[in-house]
Length: 141
Ligand SMILES: [Cu+2]
Image (tube, rainbow, N blue to C red):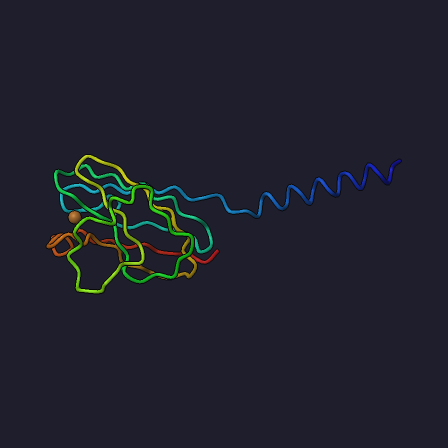
């Protein structure tokens, strides 16, 4: 009897341990204002899903793009943003991209897999040059 109780406790502890090791998504809200991002820098953790909420408070269309970054499980809530005009060289496709119309909000979920410092920017013509650029720091888990 006593052994059965101990076995049950041990199994319960194992289950708790399994739950604790699954990473909770990191929720990040990034706001586009007049030709800038707020915040202009944020941190993420490698191997932990990022749920990015992109809020456009400006009167112009904006996006959040990262050209090169090792990621997995990328999904964009509103695929309309894939169709918006990106002012990039032919054949250049950012790994991460989410756009929002003026006053709109869009979402992007992704899991960065490699620690490092990555630049994000707006692909609309002239916006990066006007200051729509920021830094995402991916920390080791
Ligand atoms: Cu922009």
